[in-house]
Length: 247
Image 1: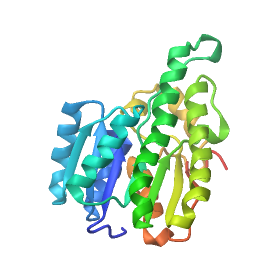
Image 2: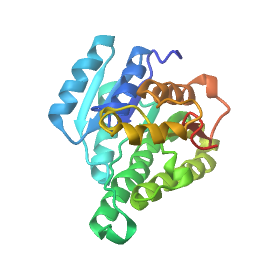
Image 3: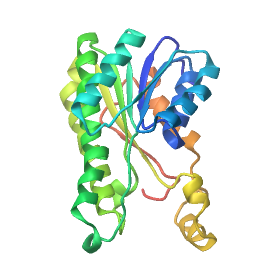
Image 4: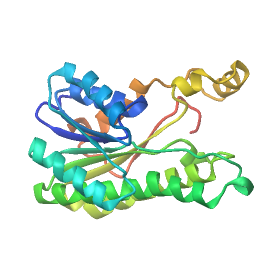
């Protein structure tokens, strides 16, 4: 595992699931970690899990679709930690439906959180990274942003948009020493996938070359790699962690 001792990291949407695992991995690697979510009780529970690693932990309830919320979260993180080295844009929501049945509110909310939120958090963090002339942003996209998926027009558009943002940010900010990459997970084993009917899971596994779902740890390892010095000459890249579901 890469060493992040003394580094300061923000992970959005980190009260549970993949985000929490990413936060735990950074803390285990020595980083101070700031996490946000929309539930204070969930953040408190997550912080209790993160404190076992002995680094500084900061939590804040944040609506990442609000520029004021994003800027305040970054400013408060700086006040707590002194600086910012890594931003992981993980927060995201789904409101699935077939296109003809999808209402405008569900389209707008998913785009506002997933895509606009990634833009706003990055913009707030970049102000700090520019001054340091160093920093890393890792955006969590999805395999569906690369291949499309029926019933998820809003989510797919947001995740495909994140890939476009990643490449644009990389071109705009490379000269300031800031690297920007993305991870595009495939099926990840979570409580939600565990609850799927066996027939649905079997059909999904048939399409995956490695014949298993990813663990949250598989995704976290990819994120830490991209944020580390081991990836010091990688920027604008989309790392597919999908077990061969899409190539």
